[in-house]
Image 1 (cartoon, helix red, strand yellow):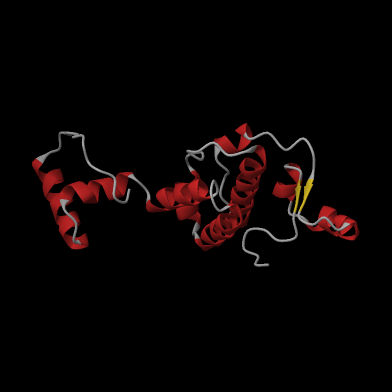
Image 2 (cartoon, helix red, strand yellow):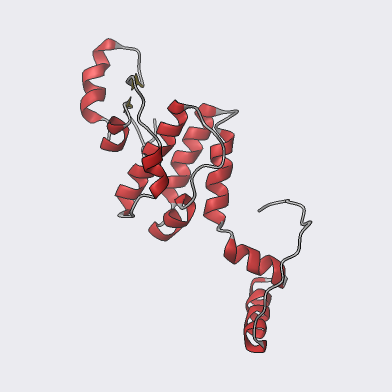
Length: 163
């Protein structure tokens, strides 16, 4: 949510007891009511993952590493929140598949069902290898995690791993 200018208003009807409960909850967190309600509606992990995905458009290599670290740090509940919505920016086929494979692998590792948007990312037509060395291809073909293999990406490290 960050520094987005608030130019619109939303009114909702609540009971007096609900309003009091919201006021008390907001006060406990040190937020005003509006900020508190927005923080409950817009998930922080979802905002963070969208920001990391947007960063792929300008700093692909570092952003992939940051996305890897972020996905690895999430609990199962946080992961569900973070990945519920498909990336908000259009990525090229390679990055779309890389992000989808990372998300799918994180889901497998946290025993979380993958979001429906993963199925809308078609796999790459041609394989992409993480190294141009021919001697490494057999290793990459046999050691790449399944979500990456299904997407025709053959890498030596993935979510949770560091190079």
